[in-house]
Image (cartoon, rainbow, N blue to C red; front, side, top):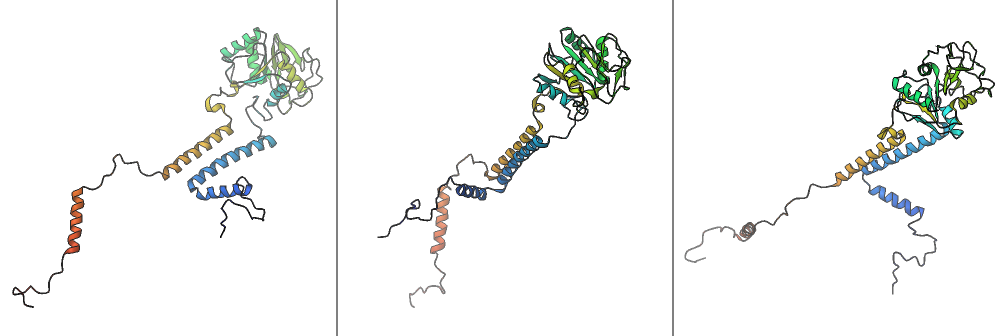
Length: 340
């Protein structure tokens, strides 16, 4: 009697092989078989999806290692270039301060009641709505820090006096006022000074050309290089940044609408890598739909096709019989007498 081994019976095998479908070899074989059965369009969809995910993962990993190229608007807390103040914002966050970039115009922004509003070299000139909002913020016990030439214009509008900003400052203004008493030295590029202090108190720089003015919760800084990314780590500039922001009193809001940023809504609120990923997935989905559509046949008929009429069948059958039974024509006509 012949014994036939079943396909799944491994009795008698001594080579140690296994057919475990969960093994790596089994997975590879299934993947290869699936790939060979897949049409070219579906393969293209898979490749595009893998590339989108892979490229985004690589970009994220590269950002975490080397970061992006420095850049951004001058004076913005988003800007990582030399003239930005992203380092200032990061310094405050590292100290546990609630730092928020405000992308609404100052006249419409929800300002922190007991916090600080920082306005560094704004692109826009003072507006009545913005000045009113900042004045109400100061009256409610808040603080406003205005930096640079354009910031001096906002500070002057708040005190009703032209502070006489000039680009001729000193690169090493010494702290002189009570607010900066714990600082010993500051270092910048001498990019600005004031010629008129009015009701404000000089805090740093020569008496005839102060660089920092304070009064009633308002802080005006003539030289923006004392607080930018390029100089924040020099001398006591970091200490100046912490003291001016009043970090111990409450949250800090950096005004960003005045740098051209608008309120982020809809897709604009998503990071650009997310938008790129979403676009790639949309393209892959559309290609997938197109691939499926190529394999579909024509629309289903609304009526069931019926058999031909019975009469037509009989006529066709009779014609076939006539062709099959018709005798061959005789070579000569038959003899009427019946003789051979």
